Image 1 (cartoon, rainbow, N blue to C red):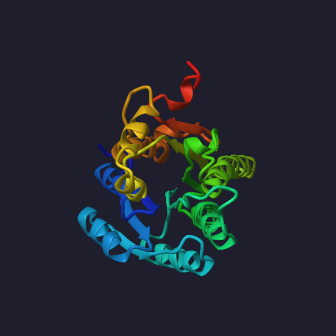
Image 2 (cartoon, one colour):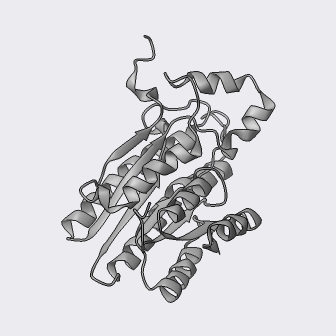
Image 3 (cartoon, helix red, strand yellow):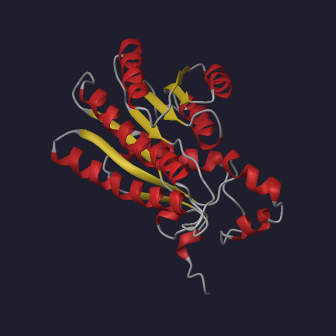
Length: 255
């Protein structure tokens, strides 16, 4: 306990799943948590549970980020962690995807992460004691192996992987003590999978079989890696890709 004491952390997509698990774990480690989401009721409930603050934030909407930055600065006077975790799926192949859906997924999964990094850097540069902080971007194992049935999701998660590296190297070369790393969960039991599992319960065994460990990950297990990346324990880790996938990407699919 206490690994994030006195740190101010913003978590997007904080109303459910990995984001909500991170809000609970960050708080348990001493952070002051800002839960950001478009799901107001759920987000407010999580914020109340952890003694944090809720912000209504559409990550694809730049004015929302400007408002969030102003509120964070006025309330806390600093920002130490941005966990860019908000994301959506579309479930459409290249032949099926429509432009409106494509743009929505790009906006949330990629532009939202870019704006989160940009806003985070701006606030972290003004931290007392000089520029410092940790940017954590949720990508996916889909950054390495595409999902043919979800072209937009696969494209964005691959892009987040390299966006993270560009941000990490930029900050390091600029002399900022601001780190940026990507987090790559495997199949994880979160609400984002709920519609698919309800429509086709047989998919549960398929998702479990993706990992050599024979099960899906739990949100708390992904949050544990986020705590490490948010903490000073990872002070020499930047531009890294942190797999939390139960070994999914470690084995050859044909063996």
